Amino acid sequence: MNAEGLGLRGIRVRFGDREVLHGVDVTVATGELLAVLGANGSGKSTLLRAAAGLVPVSGGEIRVGGRDGRSARTEVAMVFQQIHLVRRRSALDNVCAGALGRLPLRSSLVPALFPREVREEAMACLDRVGLADRAHDRAGSLSGGQQQRVAVARALCQRATVVLADEPVSALDPAAAEQVLALLAELAHAESLAVLAVLHQPDLAHRHADRIVGLRDGRVVLDGAPATIGGVDALYPADARVLTEAAS
Ligand SMILES: Nc1ncnc2c1ncn2[C@@H]1O[C@H](COP(=O)(O)OP(=O)(O)OP(=O)(O)O)[C@@H](O)[C@H]1O
Ligand SMILES: [Mg+2]
Image 1 (cartoon, rainbow, N blue to C red):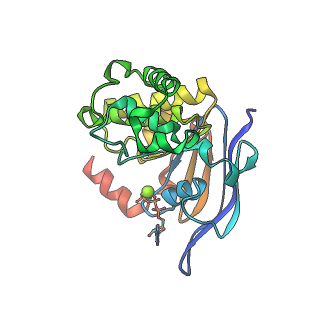
Image 2: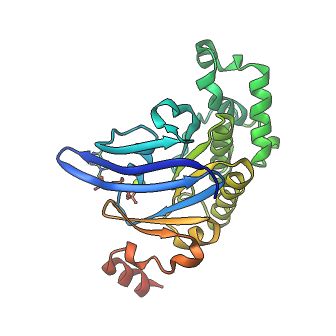
């Protein structure tokens, strides 16, 4: 059993007087890709945002590498469906930006001042995701799948130990989605990262994830290895299933 990379224990989140996460327990080991599945509104994004410290929790505990998550924020990187790259800057500059948390302030004001060792590390991260040859292209000129790989390289350059990915492949074509998920799984295994990815495609989760957690109405209702977890029908409202079955 690998060490705990990310530990979410009894997480509760409320918006106003409405509680949307009712005590969620999820652990992601180092070297593991965990997929989170669940219907719209089941609380997946809220769980990721809570894990990243972007929304306050009203109960529970967040542990990163066995430590209090509040003291380990720079170890947690996020990768979004809407890729947050600076489109007019190069892929390399975007990856260098991952290192900003450990650089002096002037580097963040004048990106051209990224120190050479950061640029070299960023180049190695781009190489890791298969994009070294596009390092000097503007991020905005890359395809969606390539931009998503730049976002993953930026997380590597941040030296994150935990990567939280919210629907990282929803905007990608099927081949690019496979490629990005295979990359996330490979990096989890090879770099001992704890990767938690929200997906809307159960088949992708079954193919690439080491473990699947299912959320329903703010509660964990499934948790297991893809081979043992069986179907995920219980996660999705029955009327929606009838519609998809009728359409296929
Ligand atoms: N900032 C907010 N203020 C109030 N309610 C919110 C806020 N963010 C999320 N919610 C509510 O919390 C619940 C869970 O939302 P969340 O975005 O986590 O769902 P999700 O599982 O990511 O859904 P989707 O698959 O549509 O992305 C929803 O009912 C949503 O309306
Ligand atoms: Mg969401």
